[in-house]
Length: 337
Image (cartoon, rainbow, N blue to C red; front, side, top):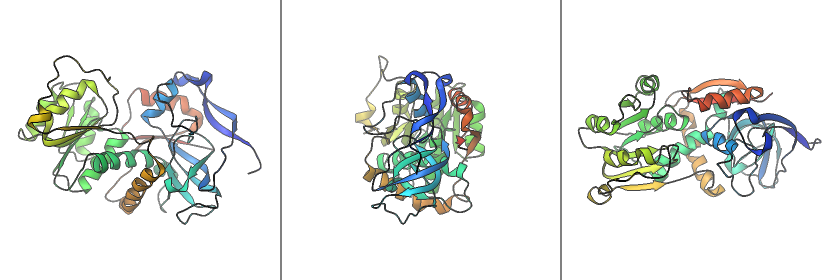
């Protein structure tokens, strides 16, 4: 590369509303390390953490790019001398990063890259890494999923939960359930994702009673939660004996209300486990990448990447605003010209 700069999405004053986003054409080009590839980005996916980082509420890992975005697709422009995985300059790839995906170029460890399958578009590929790897981590590594277990996914029409419901079904789940906050999204989970049951929590605040009814009072083996404090008691209520609640976020808050009944921890041997992905080591993420690679042949048949909309990155403000309105079912993808 002869140029030392590139275009990337930046934030006026370092943090702010969606309207503060703009494309900065004088962003320094990332420096590639010996085990890294420099990738020319064709598309990137939006994630909820991007909104939090834009607002200044999500500190990036030490040493990571301050540029938004953690998942992308594109072609390898340069390759380090210690790169792994049989990659070559010009290869079409997609992958996960600690930051920097809202840009023309990204420097990323090849342990976090995958070859893009022929027949898969750059737009589809860009929406897979963060969502599907997070779902794999939550379900298998943290939640202890195995064939025959039942799973409840909150935010059922989000990218991670869409992936998770498919992974659980393919893994032999006895039943898969979902909650959403819109009737249309609950119907999407039932009709498109084939959930055994889906509850619109805006219409049914006592969603735990609904799930217990669907399970004949037994409850579910695993709950994957992003809401936090408002759902904590109900999560405990719906967990079966030896059940596990995996907490991936706390979008509804972190402070528990008075009167929370924790007797289930003893009586039903319930476990609550918190987890993150972005702060994990390259070695940990490589393990998850390999788990995803094993499942890539299933895309187009067993698995489907649900893209709600594709937008040019020049419309990044509108893309963030759409995510903030919670109006999507699946991923928002931005293309880079």
